[in-house]
Image 1 (tube, rainbow, N blue to C red):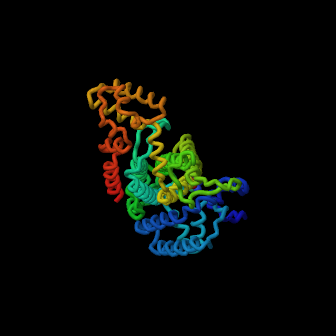
Image 2 (cartoon, protein in one colour; image 1 turned 60 degrees about the horizontal axis):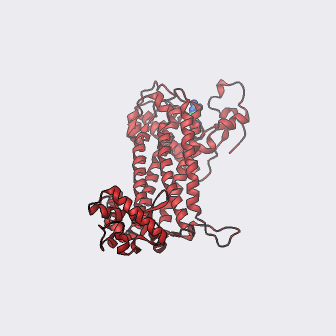
Image 3 (cartoon, rainbow, N blue to C red; image 1 turned 120 degrees about the vertical axis):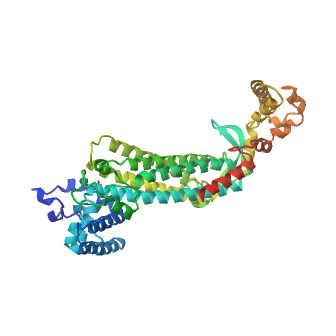
Length: 464
Ligand code: ARG
């Protein structure tokens, strides 16, 4: 990034009698970070120029020159030869200046009927639309990976928790499907957000529209926008679509973070439910025995940063009067970082899901520890005619007795169980087993292995 000041480089220089100080220049410039919009900026400019030519606002020759110049410029950017200048403030002015160097007056005509205000709003929307498509693709990959993991474990029993206390047995497959549902809703949210991102601001110019006979629908079609922003003031000023995207992104990270929290707990040697492949873990520089689940821990941590970006954008917007204000330049870094964080996180998690090995024995042993089939015993008594509250009470007493004897409900002899209710007979042992308990929850959304297999099929079909 060049630091030298050159007055002729400034797009508005004629109006000013003294140069901007270096500090202010640095403070107001965005080219350090917005140069990553170069590709979409060029795409937007070419669509705009094509329309100008079609409407005879510029000549066919001007358009051809602009196309040629842009192609050259694109290759300079791709090969790292393009020199981004701080003096030229942002990506838009840098590109326009270079274009003019390359093709002369045609470059200077490109900005006819346009402002950087509608230009930047268009760029962000194009950038975000493609980011959303990438994110939706990665959410799909993650769901596939979780479904593969679920399928391997439709019969693997683990304790299901409420309040972090053993509640009822569930299958590991069922547990994974809970996350598939979350990521499926995340996909829906992203797709829905895309509809509002995919609208064209160009034509709004600085704020009020333009005096040239432009054709906004034509530009929208060229750029693949589904609609045109209906009000010029709104088009250049609001960033609600970006806020919405960050909100949807924050929810994705929240779901990833919940999964991460579980992975960290499950991998603790105290719990020992899973192992995560070495390539996703690191060691300790001082404790040779350590294998740390760094990836889920970092994902949990990065969730905070994405939540922060959402707050940043909401706060950025809340005080802005119509129409465009320079505040909006601050939308980019939070947005870019949200996209980068989401893409890296989802990519790694889709890969890591395949690197999770489940330790069925410790899971089963843990499910046996907490009287996880107590509800099954209560349901059994209800089916024999006892009102649910009485059944609940009878089973609570049985659990207390087990606690004193340090045994499981299924280990009490029949005579001991019958002390809590005469309705109990030998068949009770089939409901007291973990397998009996999960298999009995045989309805849509339940944890029975047969239901889990069905749910996997449905979720796979949804992903096609
Ligand atoms: N770099 C600016 C932004 O990100 C582009 C628009 C500037 N417009 C202006 N009138 N200063 O928002």
